[in-house]
Amino acid sequence: MSGTAQAGLFGYIVELFTGAKSPTNVPVVEAKKPKRQQPKPLPPKTKPTKPKPPAPEYRKITNFAGKSFRVGEKIETPTGLKMKVVAKLEDGRRGRVVKATDKSGRIAVLKIPIDRRADTLESIAKEMTKISALEKYGIRHAKVYEQAEDYLVKEYIDGQRADEWLVDWEKKGSPTNTPEVRALLRFFREAAAKGIYIGDLNRKNMIFDGSEWVVIDSGGVKKRSPEIAAAEYRDKMVEKWSRSFRHLDDGLNEKACGVLQNLLDKGLKSIK
Ligand SMILES: Nc1ncnc2c1ncn2[C@@H]1O[C@H](COP(=O)(O)OP(=O)(O)O)[C@@H](O)[C@H]1O
Ligand SMILES: [Mg+2]
Image (cartoon, rainbow, N blue to C red; front, side):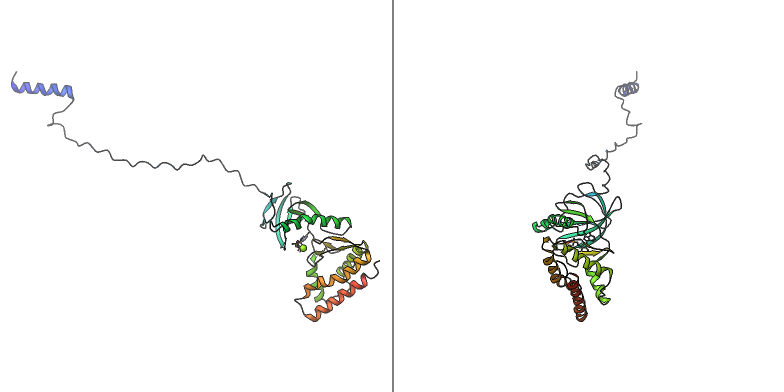
């Protein structure tokens, strides 16, 4: 065997064992550097999402004191009475009153304490005692549908409040023979005849419903002799009610007060 043939055979054997090609017939390809891969950001940790239960249609209220309500809001009392707020009526010194309808379409007012101060809470809690006294003596009042420590649901009285009526009445020249005037004298005569003086009957606490004056809020009911009760209404009501005339002309103011006083004097004279 020649030297060249020997070398060729050797190369062949090497190639056979190592798989290495001779550098002459294999193009040298530089191995690509693997790209350094950025670590993938981990997906944010989220709790497995449960489908949210739909918000309840009615907001269940357990503590009423100091709460506010939106018109259109649906609320539920602890007993399950469901109501929709249809109007905000008034924020008084202690009470917040809204008009609401219940599922049967009944129109009511919801009265709650305006804050959580002890005297505010107490005044609402005591309201039921005053209402029971009106009930006992058969005085027409807003009936209570439901009550607890910090709220009352009462009959809504549709009509004109005494303060608004007084202004209208005065503008008309204080006529003495109108349904409102007759009902007013009837109201005081009957209360006096029953021997009760109803405290704090201010002009925002009575509503004329078209036939009767209805008490929507009051002070306590005090037992008196009919004569004394009559004298108390005669002496106190004009002073109490004349306040709504203050923003009007003085002359008229006095005239209207005089007419009202005269009506009460005459109307309550014969109560014994
Ligand atoms: N039963 C009702 N029907 C109609 N309006 C009412 C009724 N109760 C209250 N209101 C309205 O809300 C206002 C305040 O109510 P009220 O009970 O007198 O509260 P406060 O204790 O603050 O004086 C009343 O003057 C009246 O306009
Ligand atoms: Mg009042």
